[in-house]
Amino acid sequence: MLHIGCKIRIFWALALGCGLVAVPAHGQQAPLPMPPQQGPPPLAPPVDRTEQQILRKMARERNVDRQKEIVADTNKLLDLAKKLQAEVDKSNKDQLSLSVVHTADQIEKLAKSVKERMRDGT
Image 1 (cartoon, rainbow, N blue to C red):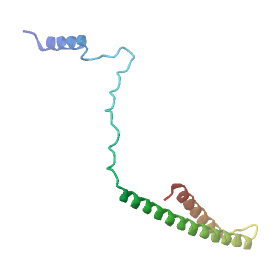
Image 2 (image 1 turned 90 degrees about the horizontal axis):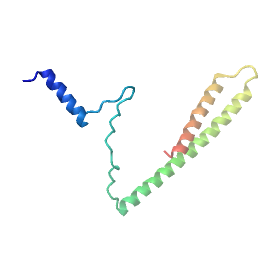
Image 3 (image 1 turned 45 degrees about the horizontal axis):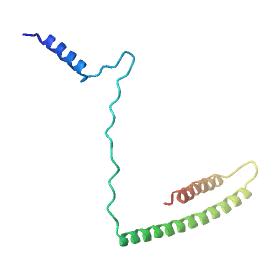
Image 4 (image 1 turned 60 degrees about the vertical axis):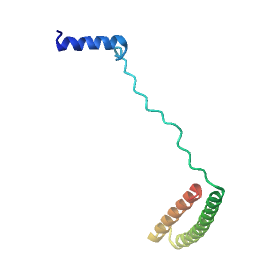
């Protein structure tokens, strides 16, 4: 009868000999297991013609609303720029009022918002 230690050594010798276990050579790393391959994403259910027309109409309406918002914000930007110019004209060369800085901040935020809305289409 073999001792447990001998059985373990025989098992590892057979496993290594049969290629069931791979041992990396000195200085080499063991290969990483490959992640499971994912197939293409499931296709969306077919959309009928009526649904397509509704989706296009909704997209057009969103674009019209977005355009109206952009026009309104652009007009507000123009008003703020005129206000800023008037405030700067009233100030002297050595001192700017706090309202000038506040108006400039408003212009910056609104301009950034308009730019993002134009770029993203949202």
